[in-house]
Image (cartoon, rainbow, N blue to C red; front, side, top):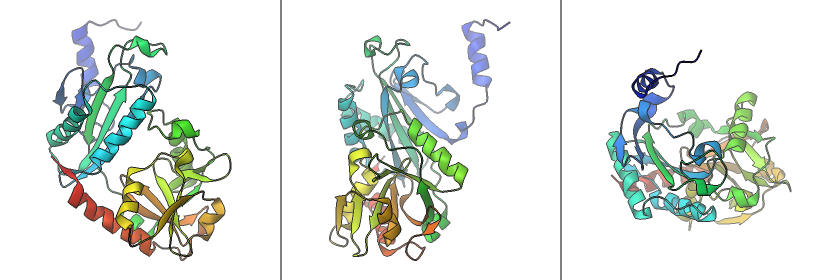
Amino acid sequence: MISVLDSEEYLKRMLAVKRPGTGEVLAFYEHRIGAVCKDPRLMLIPLDDHIVHRGDGIFETMKYLGRKVYQLDAHLARMKRGAEAIGLTPPCTWERLREIVLEVCAAGGEDDGLVRILLGRGPGGFGIDPRECPLPSLYVVAYRFTPKPSQWFEKGVTAFRASIPAKQDWIAQIKSVNYLPNVLMKSEATAKGYDYPICFDEHGFVAEGATENMAIVDAAGTLVIPEFTNALPGTTLIRAVELLAGQVKAFFRKVTEEDLYQAREVLVFGTTGDCLAIVRYNGKPIHDVRPGPVCRLARELIVKDIAASGVPF
């Protein structure tokens, strides 16, 4: 028989349960409580929050280095667009949400880390109707940042064509918590021994990676970015284009798999890795099988930009 416990005994057992990953959590905030906590055992989301059982919510993840959050306002702007697209309003002002992010990072007590915002429809029932939820949910968590291996920057990474298709255009533009296709792409990459997957749309054009944007450098040295039709517009990629302006020409167009094979450089842009070079795709070499000048320049500029423009806390 399953035990039926009172609140005190249930809480005692819950706190005693071992959870993987708790050592990485620095601090977290839940809007219903209105306070920051540093005990990861208490970092819980109600099962009836529609963000859990319906995937009805959005999120953003930012990096902070040297106590400076990178691209904070760009991430919040994208989150606001996503919230408007699904008819979701945070339980506080966007200005206050910005302050909460910085306060949670500061409470974590470490100079470097990652911070994630989760904005959900809220608790209230197990149906699908948003009207069950009287108040949207808001969770913010700061956790440790593990940099990519140094050899990835020095020698480059590998990628392959994922069997998982790109998301439909209307949902690809929203950073929804429903990341099942992304999870399957990452799982496939791990099973096949590649660092990154790349998915394609129904017409055979490059879309995105599991959590990153892709770009190529063509024979003329131009940075060519796949159109964001079936991909999430990445804050790191967009900022890199701005930083490279005047030094590297860039434009958006549809990119085919053949373009990847013929490229002088194939690049991966993302929050945790900044900019990395794909030196082998589907097991075949890209150009001279080493990171190229545009990749090195882009990463150098991004690293400097984090120190120069990151929001301090």
